[in-house]
Image (cartoon, rainbow, N blue to C red; front, side, top):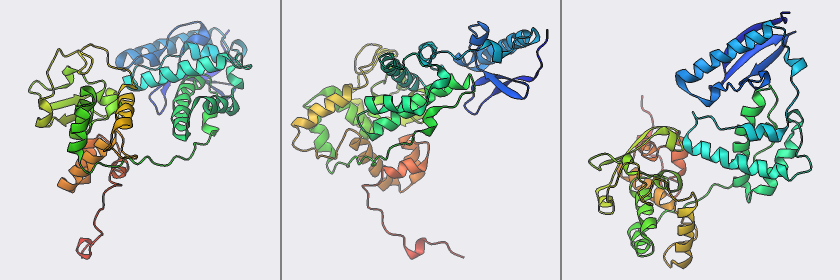
Length: 355
């Protein structure tokens, strides 16, 4: 028996995820893996040619079953939310840092749901009330709420799109967040010298944040000696390891070299092991330092070194494009946020367009 299906094809969405798509009685069906057919084919776990080949294998499998009369509306029941979350793995084509973030949120979400009265809810019964209760009870502030919502939304989009189900996160409004003000340092040298006597790792982190404009918690904490050029004049960061997703080559200021003693390429520059310190390492060090400091002000944070360095570059170059490149920002709007503490001269008549 041949089922009455049409327009069977392998397709790709805006986020480059592969799907098998077809229609039966004018109803669209989409599948990103073979679980509905009892297969473990998952193309989106791979990238490049392997991803495409797995997609073609999945297409052939669906064609075989559809030709034999398989009908998804008769054979598929909605799985539980928990089982779907437990089976999910972040796609490998995402940055390593983002995969780690999604895994952390996934574990937290599973632990939360496991203790709820609705823990056995089916995937098609999930709504924004369930997700909102998780967000409200596991985040500390509006910013944390919004960031966690984005991660959960990403996880659910992968799971729900397999069955063409709506994502309830899309109906949860983000909370208003005041932009953080990382007040620049007036005397950055004095602060660095003070930190140097407090903790060498924190000092090197602050020095790299200021002198190379690197992000402390993600880019600097994960630095390995292999990220430095052979002549120790540049640091190279792949797009998979930085926030903007773009490859960056950052000049290494000579005054930093005296504090660097090169090791094996696979070794982290702080731990002297392959594994870096945990994600909160520098955050906790900074909190301890600031608690005993007499020269750091309330609105000055670890990111104030990056803001201070950004302002210095702009003052020296007067070029926002150069600053954007140095900061590794994807948009100029983000770069402008770093100049909030800088008084930029008013527009002059001679600056206006001429005929």
